[in-house]
Image (tube, rainbow, N blue to C red; front, side, top):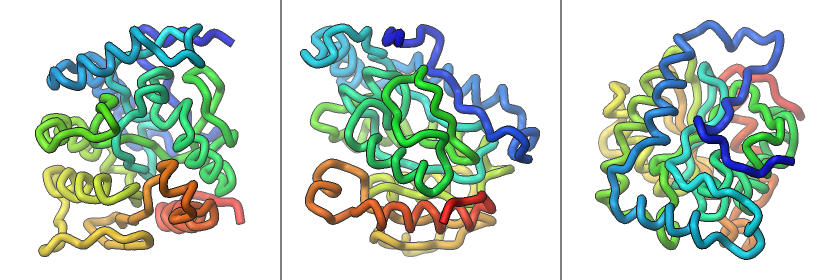
Length: 257
């Protein structure tokens, strides 16, 4: 397998053959957004960190050419369901160029998505491994890997316009959103409001299993698929599958029992 990062942006997932997910919107608009994201250098601390990690690497990945750039969303451009995380991992998305790819959190997320029927395979190891997502897209509020997985409030706010625009472009087809963790939840609510949706006041509080009905779509809360949550049992595979399945069914996507 060629492990060299893709120079012109991570490959895009395709919609399932024979479904009606295509043709809802101008696919090139989201493709252009993805390409613009990969060239962003707006946050000096994040630029320095992602590029330093790409140079020094981790010993286990010494033979990889790291992506070392902002990581765009992954999934069909007319997705009916969106999963929002936190940020790419330093040796995961920052290495492979694809969201939740090449790290333990991605292992958990994509295995659950495959179990539910939203992914073509249970693993996501590189941007050219053939993984396809069915009617669902994965993104994050911060597109660069942050030190210690902790973006600053200023970095979160600087990156927010990308998520707002992504939501606007997906709006014609989008029916459900799953926010992973409190950071993803708050970031998603703010971005949804800026994208023109009516968000309740006061803002709904994050909890696992939370469900909020908005303008033509529903927002679901889920504990983040971090190692801390999955290793301690705060988030089990069954809990994750339940949220993903409910969100998929709400979006009108076929699921596995």
